[in-house]
Image (tube, rainbow, N blue to C red; front, side):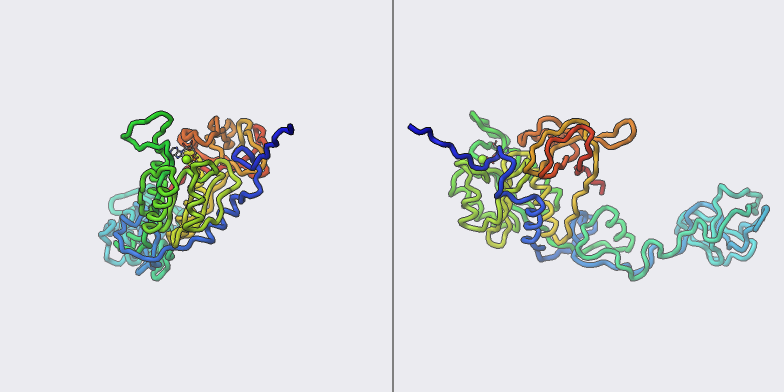
Length: 422
Ligand code: AMP
Ligand code: MG
């Protein structure tokens, strides 16, 4: 009897799979196939944080509107300054922020001035109070001052008529302040992208339910909720859907009626209970479903009618990696703004990083500095795609290119920090 030959298909265990797209190609493909949603709303300035501006904003006047003092001190004309030795000027009044001095300040005269006070007529220079000697109604000055010192010119922040923000700007904290400085209290923003999502799996229980044998709590719906919340989208949580073809089909149909984007987790692989791809192919369109990355290789992207579809893998780390690398840029573009390219920095690996060529890897790392101040990174430990704690204890992705093999300690690697300041 001849022994049966087992032919091995490419699997999750292989690093090279000819049917996988590169991360770059997958992202480019996704961005090509999503477009900004249409629709606007007027919102109060405070509610505009993180939203995408639907109009361009121009400054109706100069900011600051008045040339004013940058220091507490004495305002005078530079013509009254001594060119050498010590000179004196006579103090004829005071100017406070919001309470200007209205008279003309002539030669040999000065006005006591506070930060933010409008420069009185006839003055162009402020001498700091720390740099004078007060002698009754007079102050003594030396010859080391320059015309226009310590003065903020009208319009140095914004010129009248200047474009302050272009349509498509995602509003950040300084933007709210800048818009407020124009006296504008309401802005037009793009409507939020609507995102419906659900988890798939017979093993999943929701919080509050009893766990039976082999069951786990559904955590992906919470990480997804949190990532979507930060992305300023409208969130439609559709719960857990069981691994039954009809259930998956009904949920996908409902979701596509409700949302611009449908996201699922789990069931996108090649197991017997993995129906996502099959159903997507029958009621929508599968554009691709494998990316040469780790974690996260099974990642389906396609369309369900007008909605765009992301079938994320089930493993909790894979959900986060694929969301940040692919879904978030797509949501940015759909929201009407340009996705910001990831901030990559170089850090020295403190230890060996295990890897085989064939896939781009997103290992989780912790940044630190060595004694010489050089940025270093240490992997969080076991890099299994089920170890969600690696995302919580890490503060960056260590991104290793497709062809990279084992990385020796001391090598410079690309790192994408989790932190963003504004
Ligand atoms: P799947 O892609 O459906 O084969 O799932 C891969 C792994 O991720 C399995 O161990 C699942 O139990 C786990 N998983 C799937 N969905 C979730 C979820 N919503 N929360 C936590 N773990 C999940
Ligand atoms: Mg499953």
